[in-house]
Image (cartoon, rainbow, N blue to C red; front, top):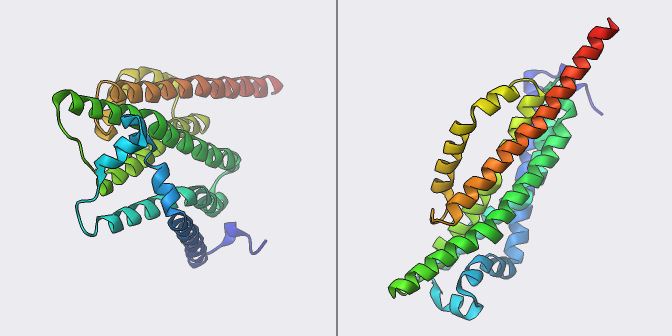
Length: 258
């Protein structure tokens, strides 16, 4: 390619970072434009959890309102910006990966590409899980509870879209934690023994986090979110144990060769 990046000066690294930032911004802007162009379809798609909660689109439309003159603009901005960020995420991860690769050791470079791919897959799983499972359950619980008490529940469009998008992004981001654990185990920074001994603390932390990010913190979404997160933690311990066993076998083989 060009000059070996390992020999780049501070200002050359700064220039490289500027290009990385520029590419990421372009990807984000392109994502915003795409979402804005398909705004009607995107906004309709984001109403799926609320439609499931009410059982029909007609009932949902009667209760989704804007009570501010400029409220619809707020909805447009929220959906376009956060939707554009979601679309641009894979490209941003790729650009950041290209930027940090030269400064990594050989062992670290080997896991960079799989880590970026895994991060995108886990992010997508987290978003899908929040959108199609947690949100419909939580919103449905809220709707039924208000109906039981005889209340008319009106949803402000700006508040609803803000809740949906931010909760999905938060869930997608938090689904990265098993990948982070696996990377740390692979790099021999954290041992499986430490992860096993921290099970109780991790479970309590996950429960607190679920209570904070769940839209209602109700009896359905809270345990479901906590359970799935903890299951991912146990899965990371299982896979990380394979990494440790493989490393131990490799070390023993090298000692035998000596």
